[in-house]
Image (cartoon, rainbow, N blue to C red; front, top):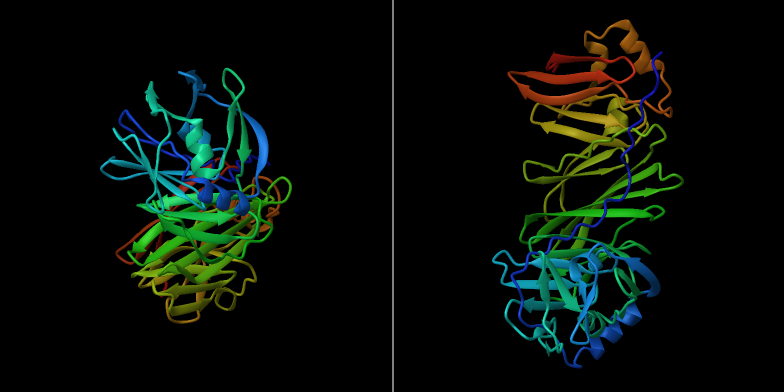
Length: 392
């Protein structure tokens, strides 16, 4: 047998914040931020640490300037730029500050104007702000240690993400989910049930003006081989439905995400139960995939069409086609013209060994009552395209 090829890519995605600014001529100063900074200090678990920045801070006229985009990646801060680029919001779980090109004041969530005594500077496409912006608006003191190093006193207790002007914050301590428009103080939407929170990332998407979905990935254990996939449906600012699946990914296999929705209903997997949920939270349809396939495992749903569903249990990773109304399923690879060597490898190779890829099938489309799949296996250096006629 050929040598095993492992290609694990699990892990929390680094927070990438995009800041697009015209050269700014003025922002921030004053003392009206004491109340909000105090709230942030009470609410956040602050720690102190040193960081070395790619874009070195500098001092001008006695004022220290730091790169706000890069620095925000170390802190519970999220940058949101309005579509017309007129305003930039610097958001935290407890405060939001708006700055604008050419203005010498910033506005916080309460509408209070703040002056800084120095204006932001753009150098080589990087926007630098006075450290007083962070201290007065968010209670985050930043000390420049010379060259590219700074000392911070703040927190990184939340994973964050945004879609449009809506910002989402997920607590790394207890799974509390906060949400709100940029420029406002976010409110609690509820709590996501997450097993052993460790390496988190979140991806929100908008369904309609009242409904949002937040996909949460959590990797934990040592060396982070356990994966949790949580999908949360938010309606009118509150969690109305949620589901989660778990997988001990010893083999390092790349796993596909669940499909987003079907006919306007959100697809939510909870273990082996698939629910199609209306954006308001009402369950429209339920599938018990364990009962239908006979496999006791958590599942991922890779496709839903009027004629069929494609589902895959995590451990064996073999694709089933499921009838949309009857409690009937078929294990697809057994019906394809795979050679004996390929079938034996699928059936006998241990799922927890590095290099295990399940049946190796990748669904590529459905047309004229036929499904098409690409098939490959790294241990055999073989690949084929299969056409499979809908069996129902």
